[in-house]
Image 1 (spheres, rainbow, N blue to C red):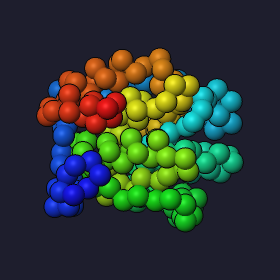
Image 2: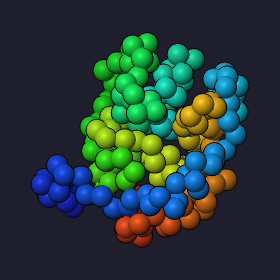
Image 3: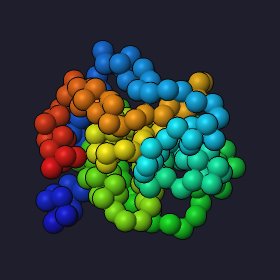
Image 4: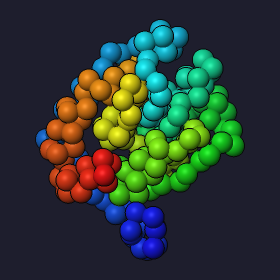
Length: 190
């Protein structure tokens, strides 16, 4: 039995708790914070700790000398493999946890790993097999007071989210997804 109470078989198949329905896609495309194109300006305005969602965003933060407390990566950007330079910026040997999360979903495995990584003392990279695009919303919910979440806005830049300011909006977005939002919230906040 895994730490979250699931069996090994359930963990291996990544139990989907939430799925993004097509009618809600536009709501998820709206930035939850200010969009930046300069990493140094973003870092000057960011709270602590920083949770980063996306390979390119994480690589930008690392190149600027900041290792996010939690980074979620999947080896892709806009559904294509990341560049060699981005992959190289993410290739260190720090604490790395592999989780499964199919596209347009949030799994029990991803949410539990995110919660545990936020609570951990060391920086953690969650390597998502599937897609990490929706993880910014639960990252905002689970982020500690004063934290920032940073994620990519395709074609625009990096979004800096003050988790304290948009936590209620993130909960609302999660509750509007198909599946079991209350179980997902309990897992994140419990």
